[in-house]
Length: 126
Image 1: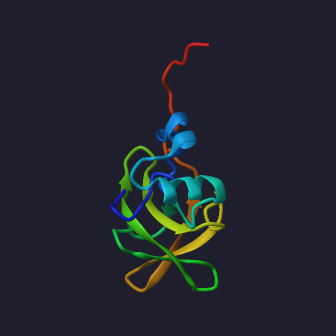
Image 2: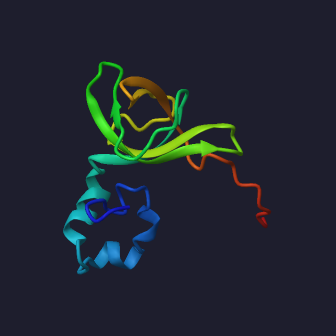
């Protein structure tokens, strides 16, 4: 997250407590409560890259070549043995399986995937 990204855009809606949602009155409440109600304009997504690893500020394009977002971080995952990245894309392009182009050194690679990249394997009491 950065200063211009809200918790809602980052997929952290759960971090805004019920009382704060009901009462408001906190810094940024107007924007955050509007995003909870109407949905954010951008969303954080996980991405797989078939080519070289994506780096911060790499451009994300839709299949038509239109710019829809930007990579925030990326690298090689030893667990998955493939390149992964996170970034922000326009709402509507955030669904898992969406084909996107991550522009790396003038070439395009990539698709949107679910996060977390590695499934949880901890014991959860029922």
